[in-house]
Image 1 (tube, rainbow, N blue to C red):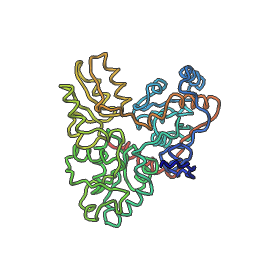
Image 2 (tube, rainbow, N blue to C red):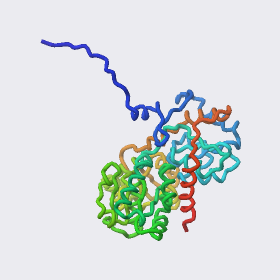
Image 3 (cartoon, rainbow, N blue to C red):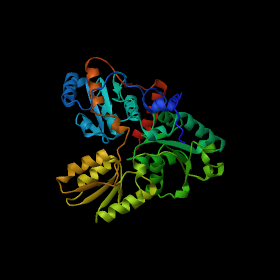
Image 4 (cartoon, rainbow, N blue to C red):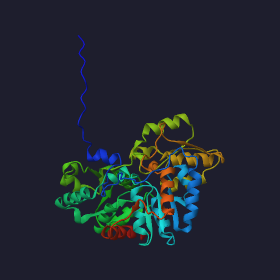
Length: 395
């Protein structure tokens, strides 16, 4: 006999995390999504480009639009300057006449721009849900707890924090307060060299791969010199002896885009494209970096392709928007540029900044409505700026 039951409605209450991911709640201490008030234009609106141009023209010199390399083409079209996160923050600081800095990137980048620009300038992020999974992997509370672990192990006084640019303002402030510096993927080696002049050990936040690759590949250390601190395990999953023996204490964080590339990806592209040059970002895993021909930041990647001879072939291990843009650019010079992995790999949070959000932002500003301002509190800004200034003083 077949029994038929009637489903009863479930009284399910969404968790705070679920609401956060849906963009219905805000967490000021997190990189993740927050509410975006107001109605966005439809993505299918055929007048979006014209509306963006009109709003930008109305704002004139009052607005300065920054476009990160990983942004969509439809957004890059309206950027006054393009670059990596630190270059763009410096570009904003060099434009004091601009009242509004519209940062087409992610949250930590807008924070850095706010730290480096004047008090009269207002930094705006078109979609407040554009965070960074890597930056989210190290919270201020977790890092403070880690420092307590290092203190209990008797190594905190010998340890200098070095934080990647891809970190929240809170983490940059912790770094500044504890005598450390910030680094980019371009100057990580210089930052580590400086730090080792100040102390015996480095706490590298939050990207384990950049820290490991710089220490081992660029500075000649061994993998045994590195230990991995896991903030989700008691004492980071490490013994006091391991902490005392280590030179590099790497935070267990990574980039969700660069972390997906594998040695199989490298081997596969070499089999498919004879003579291909494999060029990857240092946020990739150590074994991928070891298997590649060239390793460097986004700016390095662009310059390498600019200098490459006609007829050369390149497989690039970084975000797909940039790779696709480079492939189109250099096709006319008879340079073949392909994505290292077979599957699509956009940065999902970068891609939250789209043309509808940009139009909404520009039209709101043109109407005198300040939206989505990113503002770092004075104490955090003071210590974060100290860490950034130490980086700027590197040779």
